[in-house]
Amino acid sequence: RRCFQVESLFLNSASYGATPRVVKECKDRWERTMQENPAYFRKHVLHDKLAAITTRLAHIINSNPEDTVFCTNANQATSSVLKAFPWELGDTLFILSVDYDATKLAANFLERTYGIEIIEFPISLPMTDADIISSVRNELERLKTTEAGLPKLANFCHVTSKTAWIFPAKELTDVFHAYNIPVMVDGAQAAGHLPINVNDIGAEWYLGTVHKWMYSCQGVAFLVTRGERKKQGTIPLQICGLE
Image (cartoon, rainbow, N blue to C red):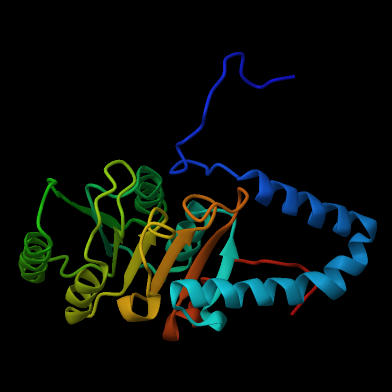
């Protein structure tokens, strides 16, 4: 049976992705291969294949393979970082008003659960990169003088979901780092839209999706955790029974 009663052409890859037929056919072949001997596939095939495709993805987004893991979606990656971060009562999280709605919901969860405070900085687009950077820098200067002080973590979108506005990811990351604030960049809408150089951007965490504008099958995203932050346990569990 048809899922829809009218002819439709789905073009909104920004939501859940639209899997090309050739990708769907390839996925079906791998599914059949796995079902021939699931135990053997998971013990002797899957690990090496995941390692190989992780290396390929890292090459595309210019990250280190050992820093890069696959997730189900960007929300899982975001939650992995936010829930593993060592929050203390009264800490603050810095987000932008144009950040993704699900990220704001995750921030609200932290607020209720850990007693942190959310700083939602207003951004009125359109703005030049210079204006965005200077406004954020001015806000950080103001926060330095408050009782709460500077935020413990900052998050922003590389490309916004609703407006597709491209933010100066490297420059904004540099601003936060100048105040010793770690950064998480939400690149869910960036991968496939823009050339990405995760190592050059320099954020502690960079996450994105493969099933949107890179046109994989649904349920493929990634999280890059750089430097010492890997010790916080922010890498989601991928496979049981394998080291």
